[in-house]
Length: 136
Length: 136
DNA sequence: CTAATTGCAAATTGTTTGCATATTC
DNA sequence: GAATATGCAAACAATTTGCAATTAG
Image (cartoon, rainbow over all chains, first blue to last red; front, top):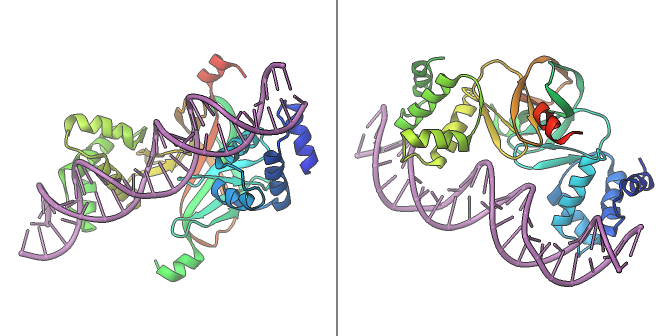
């Protein structure tokens, strides 16, 4: 989705197009792939947009997430935002915290009483580099 | 595993058997199934053990989790402990926060560069009751 | 002009840390 | 008696809330 498409999307849902929202969406559609915490995004966007508040970032990302325009999951401590469109699992290193995409080949779960909105598959472990450093 | 077996397990790993640990392990092995937050467990055990500190609970649960004696996952905000031994997925209602077990029939993921320690499958959505109340 | 959005300060929540005291082995 | 564990107070990190000022439509 292009920046314009996303903005159109927001407009259609009655949301206002603010410069903060434009910046965030621009960033997302430029990057396309990768994981970010709110903090990281804040650090990056603050440079170009010094008046930006992290509270606004929380608002915007929360809204985009609700609309299904970004995907979010938790590393157990904080929310990670993920802009890549294809579903996949995530590997999180419990030592260095690094997150890597993992192919999700097959996932079958039993029936759910209710409306299912999203599925998070998180694999925790120790990445190769940390294994080398610490041993196991 | 019985309380005695778990305690033996701890001893073998050089951990000391304290009354706090006994209480926690007793509780876990009595309940066997169900999800708890540290806060809940603290509320329950505090009655029988008024001097118990929640910090100690964090310590104990963290240790038991490391040893693989309890399973833990995140609801995105806090750590949920799960004492049932068979692997399964979890459904979390984003409205009321209730957590239910979901059968995990099949899960195949791609290769991982590193040592895989555990997999969390969390399904988020809205439970039947909340759907009835709010509509959708 | 009106409703939505921003951004600040402050509050909350979950969890961790430092350290002195107490307890197990 | 030595090493480990507890529990308190305080620190921390991520996120949310209340609210007044600003901005988009």
